[in-house]
Image (cartoon, rainbow, N blue to C red; front, side, top):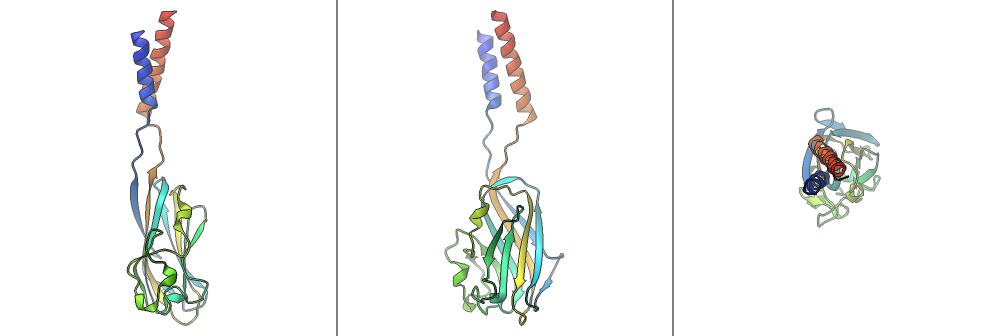
Length: 203
């Protein structure tokens, strides 16, 4: 009876998963490895893709953008997730509203938890070095996997001003997807085998 109880306890311990610890990972991306022209032809787009190999269940995601442009209100900036879900960080299809005639984005962070929306940004705020609530919520990615290709797309909607793309940072906070460890599975098998032997001996 004592042996049976012991083996049962071992099996139960093997089934108990260690709690997943939250992690914050930051990835850096550039376009073609350096500065790339944005515009000045209307509809010109620059893209940069970061391949995330870490598999997390996302709880929060932020994006930092660095670029030079003489009228940031011309720009539409989108984040495209691995499943092609697209979030508009700033820009309203050429209506020159987000940032107006201001120049450049320098350490401009798009964060759902920021205090001010990018839709209220004016030229006087340039180069927008702070955190801004994006035009569309990044929380749409919460609960999804971080694994795969993340693309930043910058589109110049007006054929007058131009600029160059510098780099961007993707910061993902989440919990690693749990994977059963071989050692734990072996311990479980040992416990179950011992439990079966203990039962046979009592018969």
